[in-house]
View 1 (spheres, rainbow, N blue to C red):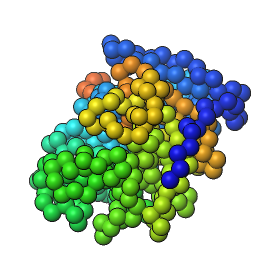
View 2: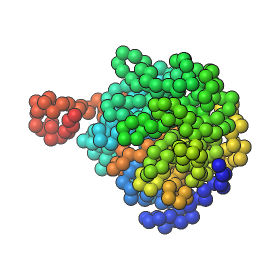
View 3: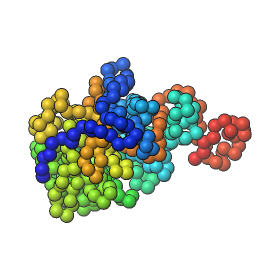
View 4: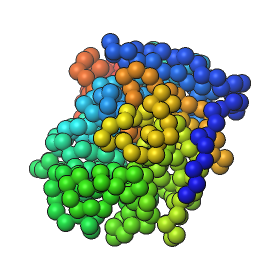
Length: 391
């Protein structure tokens, strides 16, 4: 596997922006210091594609809605306890967030959106429908498969689902993991779903021992077949976020800061681009990959990996980079500074340009009611005209 230099920063940008110099876009997330900067073409790119982004940062305890607003990016924060996995199902409007102790399920209620601030801009309103208390399972990637939410349960080294009677329901674990125990044996972390079925998984090692993956995190990572558990690609440095898109299998080799194409028949990988951070969290839309980068501080978890040896902490970046997958070039970026230093998930919201998400009590939740069609017919007509939302 080759090790190219990091992809160059964008020097010129496609329509509609004329240049891609970073544009300061400071916004306070909380009373703690936070700033962001982005290339001037990023808002136009989101607007042209008709999308927005949901970004999770467990380290800062925030969910970030990245939205185009005029010539700037609006980074809108909602507070969760260590949010990790994010899963969106466009056909139903369901959005799931995996947090430290619970899983949240939201539903898009478009009729609520016009009532949210800023007036006239919101085109989606995600309101909570359910929370499930799972306990601290170190939830990583999650995905909707039909009506069922599947999760990578990293603490118990398994895949799981959820029901009302249990914390979680174990559904699968790698064949080299013999017991169901809460000690993160292989750091199972990523899941690729293709045509409504799980296809691939990533993990950081295959030792059947508590924290066994830590012994060889530098190059012990693997891409596993599902459901056989066969290791299709070995020798990866902390792989995350396997995906199947545009006829290729993609993987973020986080320990190198790369996006690669994996060849499952040969077990080889080809680097598409190298970025200045710990690559983790990716989603695709048309010809673009939206990739999360984490700055990562040298610690017991991250020490000894190539990225930390090659780039100083000041050279490592946290944010979202946009890569043209046909050329491997970075075409836009959003950088975070201050409290946000690590990203886990990046999720595209197609056909939604300015969403909001409400997860705390207040007037919006207190006065927004979603009713079955049969019940709605009994609501006085003047109220229905004022605010109509059905299941």
